Length: 626
Image 1 (tube, rainbow, N blue to C red):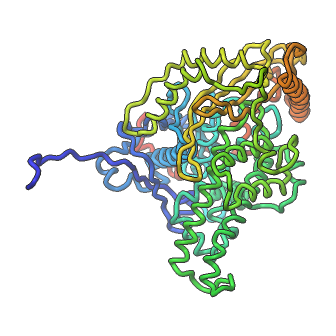
Image 2 (cartoon, rainbow, N blue to C red):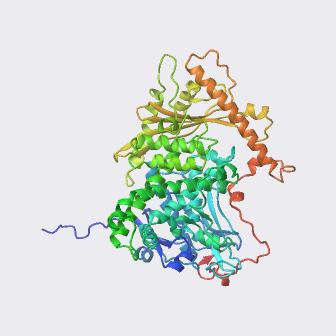
């Protein structure tokens, strides 16, 4: 019998598919490939687009023009998967920056096992045509990613001389800059350069996300597998970053390459510029990816070659291409997830690449203890070959690299959140669980009560956290993550972040406005047991004589580590000032003048005329409003 309801409700889709250039307009023109971005379908998406996490604001400050916002929920656009990629239509630019940014954010959510949210629940602003210039960067003060546009050089490779190049049309540049914003949300103090690795890690991680984003599109990977006879080391499309940008600015090639130098430690040791220093970390990670990828497809190559491992000349069989593509995508996803998950185990301030190595091992070891494919070991060895490893560990074995457990408390007790902190965190655990249901209601989090409870706990156990009980402590973060383990089951962890600013040390050392911060990241199980701590101490001002062993021994060790850390911070600040020609007459300290705009700036010929509408700038006649 037919149902009596002849007008059943039409369900909204769960996913939205939007088109974008394959890497950039130049790559799409040369190879004919267009990407299809498969992202969550936001149910109340406004023109812009403007949703819960992202707001595209298309104002051209150079020409004082507002470009008409795209409405991705318009029936015509829903029917055809959005606007076709176009260099001339600003609405296509808006669609591309929104789609790529949402794709990157969704991968973060999947790897971290929680819904992402910006501070204050304000969406990140994306400004596709913010200014004329060879730059794009994340501005933490404005909470925005701004993209420039510029005229190509006289020898722009496959492009036309003096054509307008839009950084907002490069999927690599979008992914890179949005990742900077994500890092700032996860670790806000990584914008304070306290050692050569802080900004270098920012750049390395953003490059890794952008490069591994290529593997989110199996059709692109399949083309690279077929074209390289499975030798992905030769697949420039996958291993090059921002190729059009590099070609049109007289670089003659990609902005950066994943594989670009020999496996020796000297280059990393001598590198100080953040992009250059970070590039060696990126290269080491991709070398580990290629090594494990090669091992994972060795059986497929043997089958396809009759046991020799040497593939015959000619086109590969489509079934082989498909199977190798699956392995490449799976391996890339696994490796990127290792690096992203490490953020839960990173210090709050003053990160080093050694910290990153320890965080990767600690996080991955807890989820994949057996490491059956030897990915963790391969990555650690690849980093070692580049000279990237922690300075204070006894070996590169997993147990030596993993972050330590907290010290034993007086009376033989263990550090735990049991009691009031855990009771207050129960609402956070419940709310996080509810948020995993995308169509369900969000939980209510009593942040004031949680903050008060955790601050009281941190003051009680400041000694065991490597903090100084004689100075105020601030809580800078608290969340619950449901990480996915090897058995595909969730492993919930509580992550707490504490920080204290040491103004007494700033005054002693004569630092004008340069903050000195001690901090500690705490990783606990949902039953409250603290599994690991990641302290970043400074010299202690509170006496230790009355502390019982073994806590006193731990505190004295942290004091010594903090003293060495303080010396290193001061030395770095002096080195930056020595290299800064403006330091002699500017009142702001050199280390405080380091920011993403300066970091990403490119040398420009200021004699270039501004781009005109007829030369390829967005058409303001029909698609813009002022």
